[in-house]
Length: 514
Image (tube, rainbow, N blue to C red):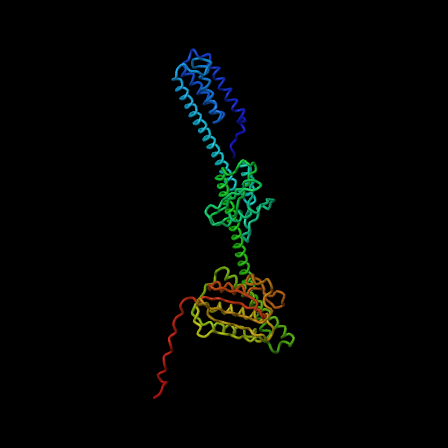
């Protein structure tokens, strides 16, 4: 809020009023010239000076001081109606009267200025308090910015503009408007936002007048920059402390809104995951029992030799195979639900990685009949602490996917070696068509298939289970396409500590020469 000077007359009029006031004071005192002492008359004239200083200002009071001394000499000091004095001591009286008048004028105007400043500060404080209270109730960034804009226009007669960063850290006006920035303002705006100084606020002058820039610093990050232009050309610099407070409360409001949005998004995501896991678990449990019965009945029919014709036996085998495939999907759904619910506890034991890979290859059996598996192991691999059952599931899923999406006869390779940190780097690669373009970023999500356009059966749970198991072991898993064709899944597993030593087998005492 700027100092209100609309109640004061123009300088020329105010000086004329001061002269008229002095003349009126003399006119009042003239009839009392023979009644009051000169000292009392001088006090009345000084009172007039104090009144002028209080009502008009410093320069008017100074003028009134000199005019009052002159009128006092002319009308009240003998000889009257003359500036001559009958006694030289009156010169001391004039000097003291002038000094007292000037000193009183100075004190009065200083006191008034202090009172006006205190009143302005109080008004600013009340306005900032009201702004902070309004921002506390803002429910969106647009609403918070609008309230601050209204405040700046009303209290400072300035034109504010907010520049907030996007996801890439580039500043844009918020909300999008028509604010045009010169080259200097653009450079200063970017410098203020990216500065690491504790107080990077600054000002710049351009064709449109003075521009102030203030960073919106929150507790965790910088949320943007507040830019204020002077609309009235009265100067915004004296209001810099107020704008700093405005920028501070605005940053707090923006940060509060951002944290609320993050909390709401996190809660919704958690609720969605919990609901999805509950649904998967319930459906899987309800379906598994009838599937088991169906698989058993179909297998019984397929094994009956004399009671079924060839066509009937083929139908029974098809029912059995499809029931078995559906049973595998349900088992995967159950595994995924348990992993997401945190109900699976790792049973880590020191294992040889080649034995786990070999067990996985044997478990798949028929699925790998047309795909030779080539395993490359670095010599002298250490033991690794892991849950062998879950890791077998990981390798089974990876090998099954590689065989499913590769042409018959193409090999599947497994390469195992240690990395620079003492852990294991495992790659499972095939010679198929690779993952679909654009799917690598979400290939390990639930119900996401690497090649959805292919007719191969699957619901997109295998890789999601692999990621959950690897994450539980403290490792990392990622996928890529090979330059010469095919897909490749890389696993990085920590060793799990210092593996136990292996004592050498004792020598057979029966061996050796006689």
